Image 1: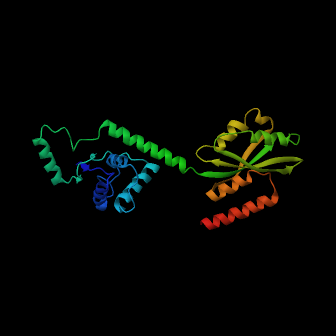
Image 2: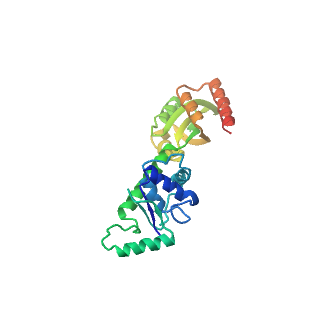
Length: 265
């Protein structure tokens, strides 16, 4: 059974859509389908908050697009620019079908399935919305690395320069310090902030530190700490990245980070 909607970008069309969704979660059936996508793509923007039911439905479809997408076929929907709103029930469907049979000259199939253009537009809109949301919501993490030299004769200044020479989108190097491990050998501890969707720490180590010329100085590299960070902590990490390692500064960083965590919880 198809659903026919009037222009959903007008006040009258939105009002009818809002009334239609009063008792429904989706345009048709009990699952989000391509019918929902057809109406979703027809909307030029999110409905006003005064249209409670339409806004609820729009936000729900947006959330589905961000997470898993919409794959169900649906029952067919037609969004018109000027026709009045009609939600097809069995009775209405029979009446419309009879009227369509009587009017052989009509070239408008109110109960036709989605065209290839409609499907393509819906899929492109869904992919674009999903990609845009993913980019906006991409999280960040704070990572502490242990970088060990081959022996006590390794030039630690060169080692740190080699580490910091690695540049890529989504990677920001932060504070660092040398930590004694015994027998005159010191290791480099260095912090970095990464965009989770752009940087893989394992790949970074394998592709940049375990190969020449970096492995001339670096014997091994381990992840000491890996923590998701909030927006407030991202700002703090960015601030710290402009300076070198100072004990008092790091103590302050851990105290402020702890307080930020408590405030968020």
